[in-house]
Every structure is written in structure tokens, then in C-alpha cells.
Length: 368
Image (tube, rainbow, N blue to C red; front, side):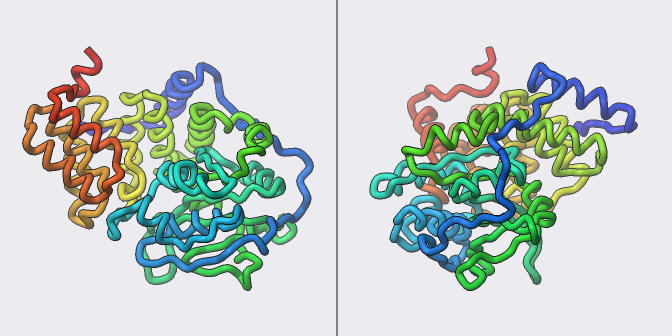
């Protein structure tokens, strides 16, 4: 199996400059947000919020439910859970799945919309909170007695004097309904594990205001460019940061730079990542598949299946590999398995339909 050799720190600047120009065409893209003079502390109206402790494996739906309560949403966590993760054991709900629930379901009866972006920063998040936009972040989490895992956290305010966010946490609580403190420094460290992804909830008639506050983050591609620049800057000071390597690979994958992305993912894996990483972050599978490195895709999936079978994306990508290799029967089984784990997994359903209609195109056929 080919692994990218990394023999000298002198190779690092050249590699980073090459990829940064490939991403942006510029020496660097800096985040431009709508931050002005922020108050030293601010909290959204907590009387409009309802806290709820999560049921089994229900962090994402519960956190979104708490955020939606600010807009009059009256259900508990289970309608959202049934939509986002129809299989109880599903190990991950992605930010776009949470946003889809808001825009496709909750918005039908409540004045609310949602969007997600990578590459956030503390100033931008405080700017949004100061304007009374609830924010959800995805971050790493290591509660006592547990290994690293992913976790969603609802941010409802901030306190610069004390250096923390006010939060509603589906696992840890609500701080007497005034918000649990989450210090800026550890939050930033663990947020980085998910490329500083954030979800904003907003009233539809405030969309233009939100777009202005988001600045360059208003555009998803530009937000990924900002995320890649941040990771590049971190690598210049510490090239052992596995998450920085991973986050550049993630951004490149979104931007369609698959060959370059795989180089970064290989180094990220060499640097070492928590064993649950691929439960939540699947862009390496997309990048290796798109470059035709099918053996690498299967290797990653097999290694992770030893820990749990409950991640539908793994079956989907294994199905893509089998279909691309002409093994229709095996591919059909994989796509069906993905749909067993998540009946709303549209990509798997589309791939299965293409297979049945003899219109499936392998990645090689798509590029010819």
C-alpha cells in the first residue's frame, strides 16, 4: 500500500503553498465576518429555550431540538431522531442532516431555517450570538470514563470577562437553565477536531442580516477555503497536528481536489487520530474513491467495521467500490445495508437505483 513519504520538514512549506494556491489562487484567504464592537457578555433569551437530556446515542437530534425550542418548536427529541437517524444505533448524524431536518420538517410549522458552515472562529460565533442567533457546534468530546467521541453543543451566549460560552448540553446539563460555562480554550481545541463546523438557526426574515454577519462564511466553498487556510497556518507552527492535515484534506475534498486531499489524509492517519474519527468524518472515503484507490477505501472500512457496524456511509462507499469493479450483486447488498441503517440516505438510494437501471457510472467512467 502506497503511503506518502514525509522525509523532511523542508518539504512542508512547498507542499502547503502548492495546495493553498490550488484551493484559492491566492497566498491565503482570511475570514472576513461581520464582527463589530461586541458587548463583553451576551446571552439569548433563555426563557424561550427548553433543555432536554439525550436518549441513547441521541446527541444530534436532542441538541437540535433544544435549539429549535427557541423558535417555538414544541416536540421532544424523538421526531428529530426518527428523521435524522431512523436506526436507533446509527453512530452519527452529520451537520447537513440536522440542517435538512430543520429546513424540510421543522420549518413547516415554525419560523426557522438553518445552515451549516466549516471554518468558524470564536469572534464569528460571538457575533452571531450577540445578534441572538443560536449556534450549534460539533466538537470532540472526552467525558470522564469515555474515549474520544463526537458531540454537539448548543451555544446560547458568551462571557468575555470570564472567558467562556454559555451552553445547553444534552449530556451534561443546563446550568440552572442559565447555561453551563464552556471555556473558550478547551472548546476551541475540541471544535478543531471537526474543522470548526457550526450550525446557525435563524428566522427566515433575518436571512439577509445573517448573511451579512457571516461575511465570507456565507458561501460554503469560501468557508472551506477559510478552513483550509486556518489549517495551513496551524501546520506552519506545528506539523504534528493530525487534525490540521485532516482538515485540509476535508476542505480539498469538498472543493473537488481529490488527489491533493488524499496526500493530506495519508499524513493525518500517520500522525494518529482517535479510533472513532471515521464514525463522523467520511471525506477520506470520498477522496480515495474519487482517485480510484479502491483498496484504500476498503482497508479503511474494514478497519472501522471491527468496532461497530452502525455507520451507513461505510456500506455506501463499499458499494461504490464493488459497483465500480463490476460486482453488481455485492454492490446491491452494500447499498441495501446502508439503507437498512438509514432509510433516508439519498445517496445510497440513488446509487442503488442507478445499479438497477444499469445507469451506474464508475468513477473512471465519470472522468472519461
